[in-house]
Picture 1 (cartoon, rainbow, N blue to C red):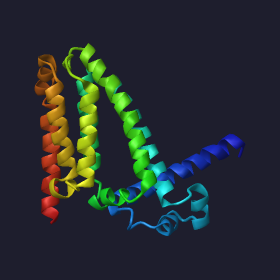
Picture 2 (cartoon, one colour; picture 1 turned 120 degrees about the vertical axis):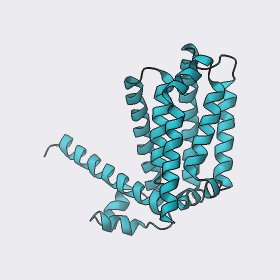
Picture 3 (cartoon, rainbow, N blue to C red; picture 1 turned 90 degrees about the vertical axis):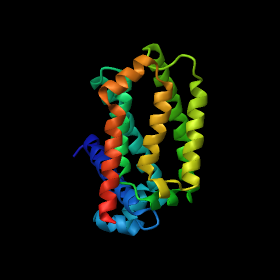
Picture 4 (tube, helix red, strand yellow; picture 1 turned 60 degrees about the horizontal axis):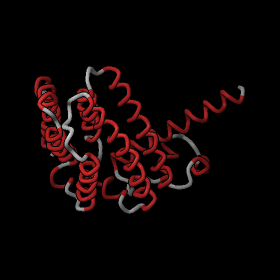
Length: 224
């Protein structure tokens, strides 16, 4: 096995660890998942795991980085498959809503206790906002969003709402998935031109997302 093949194998192993760990974290919460548990489940020594990641917080940050990278790749894939920017946006967030169903509220509570994790989320939020700003400008140029809106202010407001939701644990009462859907429905429809609204309403994009949320809540209620 040459150096290139060894590097590919190490990357595959690392990605496998990240996939498994992130799934455990979001489904059980950080506190409930130990590094020993991850090593045991993956049939690897604890020493090997700690050689790859300094600690659980470092492991989680790397999980988030990989998840964000895949999110960007998924968005670009949907962009190529979509006929307009709003279709890209709504398809992407419909997928995001589906992913949110897997998150245990304990995970959202636990991450607030990790300073480095919160610092990474703050930094990645800035990057996402820069991307979102470019995307909103694209929607304006295509006549889908209004041209009289301060989009930097909109994104800053969205951030404030998201932080309040996290720190006040609104997701415990309303459900994370339902909150995200409500925020996106309110913000996006308010930004749309008549042309944008016609596209959204003709394709029932938000109705489909609402049905996804309702279906998810029905499942949760049946399991109670």
